[in-house]
Length: 402
Image 1: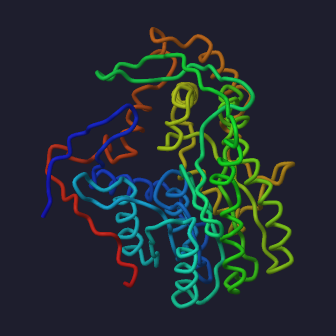
Image 2: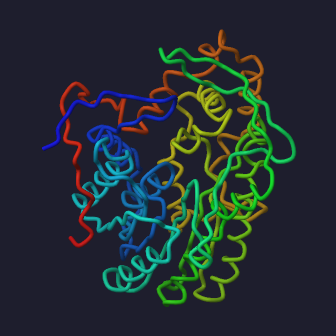
Image 3: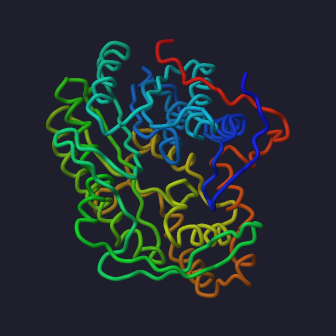
């Protein structure tokens, strides 16, 4: 037994330990927030979620299980408990697997490098021998700092940089005592091969490689559909995001969708699309300058009408499964972010952004919500959890054979 009381330790938005019971309760709360299925499918569709343990990928997994009745495989890369606790994604995955099992949903979770051909082959074998040899859906939701190309062995690193010139912006930080501060930071522009490296990691190359791998092994069902999760965001953050190195990667991802869509239509009568999500507090987004401030102000404008990831991803599954028709924009993307980019909402956020200072920020942004959301990423500040009680930290990875 390795029970102990988890005492939060953090460096800014990064917490060193995660709380297993808090992570489990968070997963349960997300599952309960999913609307009930419109109708039970005649056959449980087989789905693969790549990046299943955090953010939108976790929401896609839970919404798929609870709303679309999927079975299948989740792939993620998490750290086991040791001297420190396991990563939050480790505990969230264990909780998701247990909840799926209790609800009669067959879901296998694999922990490893999604970029590797070894993982692709392991998934292929599972599809062939455990899930009837046919995959209906693939959701691609990967955010990673680096990727090793299986063909060349070259390792690429993604960067968060503007393109063309330095970017100076307001950003939100919390002092050691928890007091919020609005500061200005400057990020130097991309140089050398920064853009190419970021596109190699965060663009569509690995997504396309997954589709090629599965197609070559004849594992794609008739009508197979794949979706990659993307983000556009506000003009307030465009210089560091959509117009920056990450934006170049997202543009490549969307171009890959168009290529795959043509190929899959001919191959299996299938399709490929990108789903553009709205803003949320995730472990990836908090690392981007200005995003924390923007999301806090957005919540200040919208309050409880801000659409959480699990609600967005429930809509994704409705459109993928045909419960609702695919609603595509002029670039062939499904937009789940219209609530965020409504002109009136953006005007209100921009007004608050322009007047935001350390002195005014508590009046303009919902900082209690934002601070709690950051902590909940690690299983902390989840309602209904006794954080004074010892908790077992040595939680095993879900058994893939049962």
